[in-house]
Length: 144
Image (cartoon, rainbow, N blue to C red; front, top):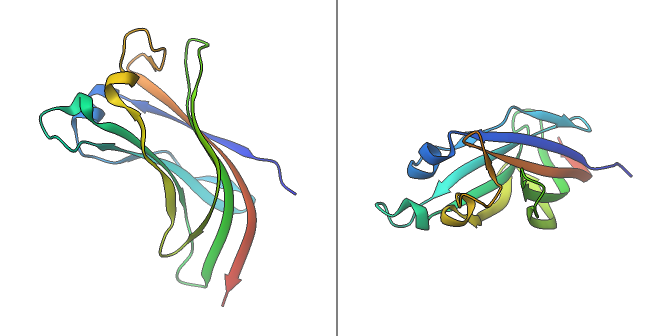
């Protein structure tokens, strides 16, 4: 049994990110030989009302499609970290299977931008939001 590893990502320039459409991601982190990263995207259903949009947070697993078909069962917990000692926003723990067809799992609506950007919310520090995902690979299947 392995212990969970926490991957951290500081999503910088959060207001520009919230108003846009670009996906941003952390560097790859290797957990038990498997590469993972955090990626975030703004979910804005109303183009001119970006504050009503949501922060989408996902765990992305690099499954090698060239050498073998890979399937990884992972237990993970998504977290938007309070940077002033308040309560974090937490989704999970969840257990999902990651593979070449579906390499990313997470929450498209982890938190509304209007809630996240409240001056006293404690989630924004120096125009950045800290995202953490606890990752625990449970099972890896390599099919050659």
